[in-house]
Image (cartoon, rainbow over all chains, first blue to last red; front, side, top):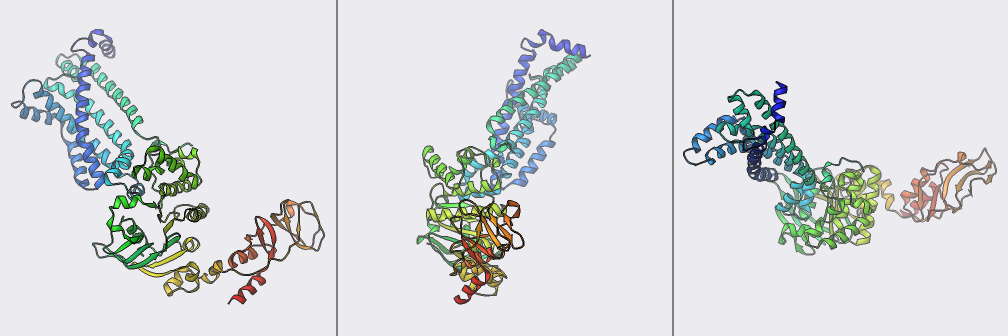
Length: 229
Length: 354
C-alpha cells in the first residue's frame, strides 16, 4: 500500500499534464485564495466594526457559531440545485463550491478580527482618544495594528480549512486536488486517493507557512516581544 | 486659567458624579484633585478635554469654553497622561511620542525632533527611544507617557493617577520629575490622585473632593493641614496632619558646629558622638567615642539619619534629628556638613512661631 502510494507520488506522469498534480494544485490554490479573499472582504470589516463599536457582538458570535455547524456537502448540493438553472458553464459549479468555502472561512476570520480589536488595551484606547485621535484614527492606528496577530491567526485557520475542504469541488465535477480523491475512489485506485490526500495536506502546510511569513511582516515586533532587551 | 462654572455630570441612571463644581485652576502650577473613589475627581478631569461631557455648566480654558472646539482638536492641544501609560505596544517609544505632533500635521522630521527632545526631558536615551514599550520597565513606560504628553508643547497637561501603578521609589522619582518639568516649562498641570500624600507633596493647590462630586475644600496644602474646612477634610488629610503641616513651616534654627573626623583619624575616648566625613566634607556615618577611642574605621560607623538641607522645613529637620543615632540632625549644604541641630532647638523655634 505505502509502496504503491509512493510510486504514484514519484511517477512523473502523476505530476504533469492538464490533470496532473501540478495543474490540480494550481486550480486548488486558485479556488482557495479566491474564497479566502472573498471571506476576508466580508469578515474583516464586520469584525472591525463589531470590535470597535462593541455593537452586534452577540450577533457575530452566533453567526460564527451557526456557520460552523453548516454541513459543507449539503450547502454545496443546495447551491448547485439553486444556481444551476440560473448560471451557465463552469460558473454554475464553481460558484457553489466557492460559496461553501467562503461560508466556512468567515467564522474564524470574523472572530479573530473582532476578538483582536476588542482585546486592545483599554488604556491605549483611552490614551489614543485623549490625545485627539478620531474614531477612525483609533481604529487604523491603534486597534488594527494591535489586532493583527489575531486577524492573521484567523486567516490562517480559515485557509487551512479552505484547502482541506476545497476537495469537495471535485464532487460536482470541478478540478482541484479533490479530483484524485473522487477519481481514485471511482476507479478503486487507492494509491491515487491516498497520494492525493497527502498532497492536500502538504499544500495546506506550505500555504500556512507562507502566511506565517506574511504575518511576520505585518505584525509589529513590539507585539511579539515579551521580551529580551 | 481653567475655570469650572457650576459643572454637573449626571449619568442616565441618575448617578451624580460631579455636582455643581465651581473651581478656578490657576495657570502655571500643579493643581491636584484628590478624594476617595467615587468623588468625581477623574470625571472632573476628563471633562476638561471633553472625554466626558458635562450635563450642565461649562469649563473654560483661557476664558474660552471647551465645548466650542471639536473634541479631537481640543484634545490635541492638551497633554494627557493616564495610569497605565496607555502606550501603543506596536509602536516604538519614539513613534509613540510622535503621536500628537503627527496628529497636528507636523512633518515627520519635525515630529521626530520634538519627540526626541521630549524624551530627553524625561531622562530617556536615544537607545530606549528605538525600543518597544514592553521592553521597558513600568516606571520607564510612565516616563514615555509623560514625554508623549509634552511632545507638542501643550500649555495644559492632564494627569489621571499617573503614578499609582508604580512602586514607591519610582513614584517618588516620577513626582520629582513632574515637579521639575512643570517648573521648567511653566505649564499648567491638573493631576488626579487618591493619595493625599501625593497631593500634599506635589500640589501647589489641592482640591479635596468628597463622595457625590462635591468640592470640600480648595486650598494650598499648608492651609489644608492647618485649617481643614470640615471633619471630612480633617479626616481625609490624616491623623498626623499636625506633624505633616511642619513640612510647610520654616523655622529659624542655626546649626551648631559638630566634631567631625575622617576615617583613619584618631578619636580620643570620651569624646561622645563624632561625625565621620569624607575628603570633601560629606557625612558618611556616626561613631560613638564615649567608651572607646582610637583610629576611626568603617566598622565603627553607625548609619546616618536623614539629612536636612540648609533652610529645610521643620518636618525635615525633626526627621533628621529623630532618625539620627546621635539624636543630632545633620544639616548639609551642597552635600557638605554645615552643623547639627537638636530636637529641643527645633521645638523651641516652633514655639516662638505660634
